[in-house]
Length: 131
Image (cartoon, rainbow, N blue to C red; front, side, top):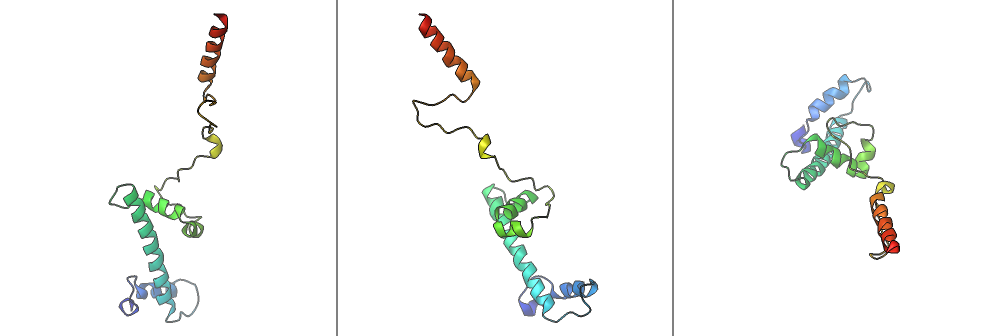
């Protein structure tokens, strides 16, 4: 039946799982075909995005990290798989904007980023006034 439907996913196996599971007493003939098509589409979508993530990382093999990046960077897949934990997937790189260094207005009036810079400027100012 998968060949007739033009699918790679096994329609007969999906039908068997629908019958064995306690979803309903009866299963229509088109239901497993439709469900197999949806599962095949979702799998192809995730694998395509994961393959792109692997290629971006200069790898030829898809690892769980690539699956995690693919799912979490896609808005719809992230919403669908929000409660799913991907083993060995890691987390998305994210730095809160408050933790990033401050942007300076111009090159001449830039503020020192560290306290060491403030101390150096203060010492120079004291040395200049004492001479």
